[in-house]
Amino acid sequence: MRSTETSVADDRYAAFRHKSFTLYWTARVLALAATQIVSVAVGWQIYDLTRNPFDLGLVGIIQFAPALLLVLVTGAVADRFGRRLVMGLSILLEGLCAATLLALTMRGLSSTLPIFVLLAVFGVGRAFLGPASASLVANLVPAEDFPNAVAWASTGHQAALICGPVAGGLLYGISAEAAYLTAAGFFCMAALSCFAIPRPPQRSSTERHSLEMLLGGFRYIWREKIVLGAISLDLFAVLLGGAVALLPVFARDILELGPWALGLLRSAPGIGAIAVSVWLAGNPLRTNAGLVMLICVGLFGAFTVVLGASTVAWLSILALMGLGAADMISVYVRQTLIQLWTPDELRGRVSAVNQVFIGASNELGEFRAGTMAALIGAAPAVILGGIGAMGIAALWAWLFPELRKVQNLRRKS
Image (cartoon, rainbow, N blue to C red; front, side, top):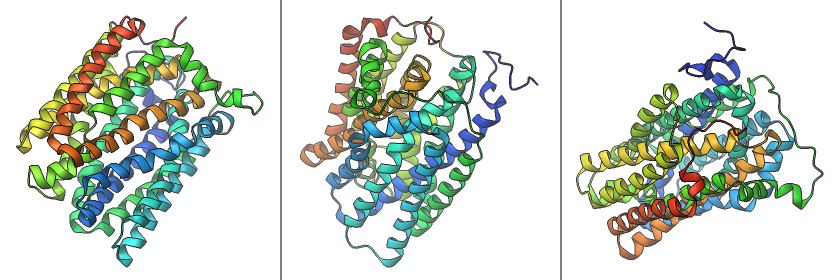
């Protein structure tokens, strides 16, 4: 076994040779699994109360709003203060929200208003967690092990996307209280793992507090066209093609199944993505990375169309697995480019901007899906969104030739 100071680029488990990354990975997986349990429970609970798909769209936009409103603050906090500390405190705030949802549910809920208020607070925790978590990885492993760390972090993310929704559906089948109690426990364990990480080296920003300092992430992304292309590609493709918010509608009304099926549908993208991420851990992209990314975004849209057209469970699950596998390539390329090509003192602010783009694609995409479903129906809304995602992939290949020509993802000279 090699020492933690030695790196071998093609070592499949290179990142786990570093204790700090192992603790980070554990904390991240537990927190993400807890978030998925909360998401499944909240989605089903709200739909049980209102039977209105528009409310499912509100779940996303309410959680996204804090990241958008605080974008100039969250990244600067991650760059100036300890990213491990910010990550741990953010997880604790999310755990407090889960515990409060548990208490309110035990007392009996007849209105969605308290849930939406707590989701807004939950969104504040997520707003600070995202930049700190994303920018911390590069401080835990050497640069040559970073692509491997991205692959394993993505594997953990997808494992949480698989286990969390399934657990959420099964737990909600027992009771909403069981789901929220489990999530709160996971958040607490995640925070403990995070605080156990030895304080990592971090090149903190020495800029004076000013608007120019806060806007540093935006300036860097605008100058670096490859990074701009990668981030904006994900934004518009998922904004149009995202369909996760409508899965309760598919599970209940189209496939005519129960909460357990919602958990299975929510986990299906992760099944496809985890297979790809495990493969990438030992087989990093060495050539045509940009072109592969664009092709996979197009495939993401194609599988979304299949999902919208499906009326049988097995085909819906296969389509979700396919879109998850395709999306994994985009995540891998984007995260590696952003973290390896960004100076350490800017990583928090760049990650905060990236989080807003991701949030806009995911949360606003859910709002778009919910709104369109209320107007034209869930299936047509998903089909049109998938067609739009395929169009975005083709358009971005033309607008960002630099991105299309990217070969290797390692740091620029």
